Image 1 (cartoon, rainbow, N blue to C red):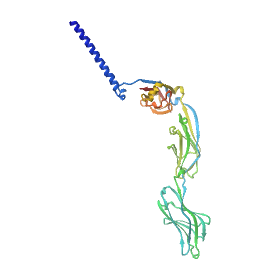
Image 2 (cartoon, rainbow, N blue to C red; image 1 turned 90 degrees about the horizontal axis):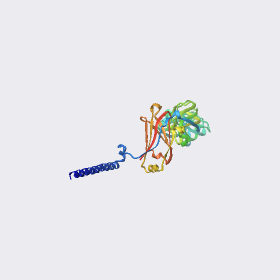
Image 3 (spheres, rainbow, N blue to C red; image 1 turned 30 degrees about the horizontal axis):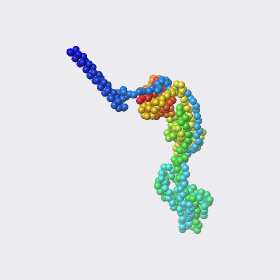
Image 4 (cartoon, one colour; image 1 turned 30 degrees about the vertical axis):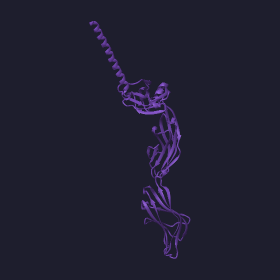
Length: 395
């Protein structure tokens, strides 16, 4: 009876141990299923990983780049002119000014100047369509006599105004004719038509001119060097500074040589329309002819720096359902690299990145993938040695 009782106790203990073990396993399974997705990687609890590419690219960059072609794009001839440009304001259609011994008729008028700093010169002009006597036309501006001279019949009377007499705001003028003097029985007179004040304004639309060139996606892909060349002719009496912009970004400022040739950063080019602007300082006039954009495109040897990989239909369905994280990992050997910058082309998408601590991790690239065959290529302006390129899909 004692022996049978001992075996019954041992059997009960084994059952109890098994129950406890199953309970612990059930709790572990429940915890794993219940833990948030964001904490699984931290706890080293992840789903299946699919490594769809794992290669050692080696040297990428200048040491492995071949020149593919050089394309030239002609630019239109333009003239950048920041000399004062005439702008007319009518004062009076027609007027008769006269002076006798006992009577006088004159023209009184006013005009406004908003910004005096924009003015290079000001002229008051009118056509002489009638005349008697031999008097002078006299111009009085803001209370000061600034002009006095005779004018011929059927000519244009042009009266230069000293800019120092001008004021911002309202300016008052009078045009009259001189007295006949001792010939008191006679009268001096002028009949004028189309009396205008003519402003010579700086910084008009002609001071900054544009040239356009349109580029396709293929033409701006793999660009190695971009040059802007032109023949720049000085038409003004004295040289002036020129500013050159490409798509709004300044690339040159100074007195241009007649044979203009400079490199332009390739990243300033756009797919589609590109604008080259020439802006000249005041009193400068330049003609820009034979302008060209010269683009040297480059390619990487396909067998060394371009890699193909495939995504199965089942993985593609998981990507579309948002159940997969897609990432690209690159590892660099800094001791064998000239720079840390690299360009990754994933199918049609271009990603520019920089190695940090010899590593690059590009996450959330699922949108750039396709079902079936995909391609990835690496390029750099200078030597970069890449020891690992890995593409991983994580569920």
